[in-house]
Amino acid sequence: MGTLLATPITEKFNESGEGNNLRYGLSSMQGWRVSMEDAHCAITRLPGHLKDWSFFAVFDGHAGALVSERCAAELLKRIVDTEEFKKIDPELAPSVPEVRQGIREGFLALDEELRNLPEIANGTDRSGSTAVCVLITPKHIFFVNCGDSRAVLIRDGEVGFATTDHKPAHPSEKERIQRAGGSVIVERVNGNLAVSRSLGDYSYKTARDLGPTEQLISPEPEITVIDRQPDHDQMVVLACDGVWDVVSNEDLCRVVSERMRSIGDLSKVCNEVIDYCLYNGSSDNMSMVLVAFEPAPKMDSELQAKDKRLEETVERMANGAFSKGFTSLDSLLFNVADEMFATAPITISNSLRSINTIVGNRVRSPNIGTILIFADILNSDGCPKSTPVNHLLSRIRSNLNGEFPPHAVYCKGALVQRILDARGPSTSKGGPECSPDTNSRLSMIQQLLASCHGIIQNGSSSIQRSGIAEPVVEPAEEAEKVNPSTNTTTNASPVTTSAASPTESTN
Image (cartoon, rainbow, N blue to C red):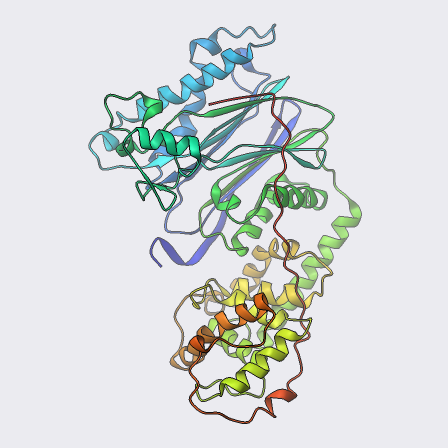
């Protein structure tokens, strides 16, 4: 699996606290990656004359964790040690331009300092890190971003502001890269790095005739200043791209707001969001910080009761799956195949017409949960893509008939994992290995997957001949007797992010 593990590491690190009339919770998880390269920083009260200020940050490392960990430990110190911050008078409103300049100078100073670390200087460490931070003062929120981690302000239940990801394909970023002698290939710097700004990554910062912010990769943060609205600002969410890759700003706003009404502990809210992202397809490290202001959603007894009912339902259905043999990868493939094709044996001798009729009947039915479960089990290459937890969640989701939203079910992934673990290690393992018999069925499933997607997308019951061999023509009368699946499921449409105009923004 390359840089991925056979099964994800789902243990989480949690932290929470409060101060300066705000609360925070955070969660981080290694997930499918072979190592944990994320780091974070959460300080509710800055030292000295800045005690009314708070600082939160997420750092997403790549090619190692050295830079991300040093950023978490030292970035804030570099910022407050700048001349601009030393001049701040706590009795007076700070100068926004000076604060912004101090943040910028702190980033550049740290980037230059890290270059001299022995591991980096001798070339044994080539790591880098994105950084997304919020500096919260009594009057302002400074959003600071360098890379493709992201911060979102939730105001009156909607996305009020979101930072912009620094990607190589963005016109202004691409222009800088090209001026520095580089190129953007498949949306990566020189075909390699997927971000256009970061700390570290010194192999992309070698042009001696260019300044630090003119290199292929720039350490310069984009800083946006938002005036606080104490009666309307509810939350700030900071997260790495392992979260944002599988959830939109709007969807995360909705999920967080809903979970906060059911769960009082902010770190547990973060845990459930990370589980939602994991079982929604994220294969990266995941870190999330949730900062809640006074107007944040409060606990709702009705939603608490509904969440408890969901947990009981998930637990009952997950335990019930064992009696039906739906827990191992082998048995899942067999059972799903049997549900899909019912009386038709899964052999390569099936005629095109028989398979076409069976799949067509299923797809033409308004209830196509089985086919969607089938697609969930395999990725676009037709290979198993996750663990039995995903498979059970898919089954539970489709069998709930819309009583609970899909994201609420996926938030309960940790509960399903605990149930599987309690049954013994053999049931909780997943991976690409299959028995010889299962490989035979998997071969047919691989061939049919693209056809199923084509039928769903095109509204046609015709199976593409390129996907299936047609050795023998057989009667399809028996196949036509198959009843459609009674499972149901709903796919949410993608949501477009909206954002309020910021007060000030600079690069």
